[in-house]
Image (cartoon, rainbow, N blue to C red):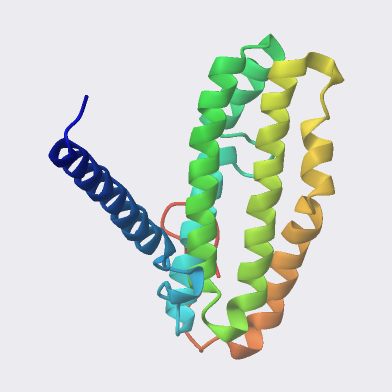
Length: 196
């Protein structure tokens, strides 16, 4: 049987434990409520040169992730993903999809940067939507690996996500931007066959 002193000690220890737990929850709440950097806070292009560098980087990510849509030539990653999907190799398809999506997301960050230059914002916005459509294409291949022929067609997923419209819109927007482009030599992207 506990003495009155033992009861006070136990009660004091219990109160300390409760106070510690409450303090930990408050601190965790403060840490989780701190704002994370928003895309708007990221650096943005302020000139044609910045826009061109950003859009070229977005094209570079696209070529690495999925290849050249103009020629229909896939990247190494996209070809491997298609093979894994057809073989029903879900683990490989998921691994490749993560790599492709990571590259597409890098392209989206580059497009967001490029969109800071106002005349180039429409082209950058179309590039962003185009990369999102390829994320849908990538996910559809993973589902093809999981479900077989019953899964949605990846090309259909790409088109339903607005990929074709975004691709055409991007080049129309680049042509429309010509009036605001400074009188400099065309900006040739260093790693892909694109000039702006």
